[in-house]
Image 1 (cartoon, rainbow, N blue to C red):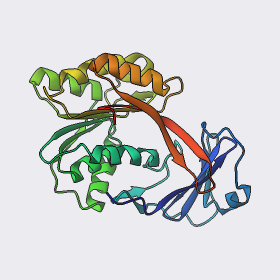
Image 2 (spheres, rainbow, N blue to C red):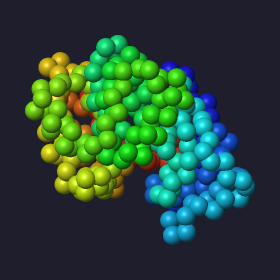
Image 3 (tube, rainbow, N blue to C red):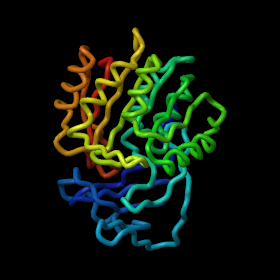
Amino acid sequence: MKTAIDYSLVDAGAGRRLDSFAGVVLDRPAVGATEPPLEPEVWPRATARFERDVGWRWFARQPEPWTMTIEGLRFELRTTESGQVGLFPEQAAMWRWLAGRVRPGMHVLNLFGYTGGTTLAAAAGGASVVHVDASRTAVGWARRNAGLSGLADLPIRWIVEDASAFVRREGRRGHRYEGVVLDPPSFGRSAGGRSWRLEDDLEPLLDSVVAVLAPEPAFVLLTAHTPGFDAGRLGQMLERHLGRTCEAGDLTVNAESGAELELGTFARWPAT
């Protein structure tokens, strides 16, 4: 895949991050930014600033929505009430990892698929992908990203449903996947009112994931952004369910300033 074109982390520190998304520079909270900023002079470049108690404040004309390219994929971006923009750049490293494992004709299941980055990365590699998210808005957003990336005609099934319920049903139907990806939130609620709490619900979900793996699977990738779920814990959990040696580590982004920002953890099999 191509390297990132439109995205950079400019700096991070003092509990905040400064990202440039195709020239739109956003100043947002970041729990992992515990050190002082390395380049305080660049922060006035921000196009907008997000505060959890007041929302977004724009310092220039609001360019919403706008688009950007990363890893050869094109995304529609827009600010949300949670402070997100529809893209998690730290996942780009996981897409590169998937690129070495996806094969044409492979069946891949992407749970909590959000706006489709992982789905599109797998589909671009020739996989037939089932994309599942409980949010109809997120699935519609992902489909627009498929169109922007020139991938709308590839074999992708777009499913609006609770991830746990969908996987259990797939298991009963006897459907199997060579690859499974899941990026569950800390907390959530499906359109049907079913709640999700990572601390309580991840283990049962992994049981269901194991049940839908093909006899000779190619990969399983689990990422998390929840305090308390460090790489060691996530890796041990995946190993316990798969019965295989897994690799685990941190999801990080390196800033132009030299700062490093930790944004979550991953566990994956096979180990690199």
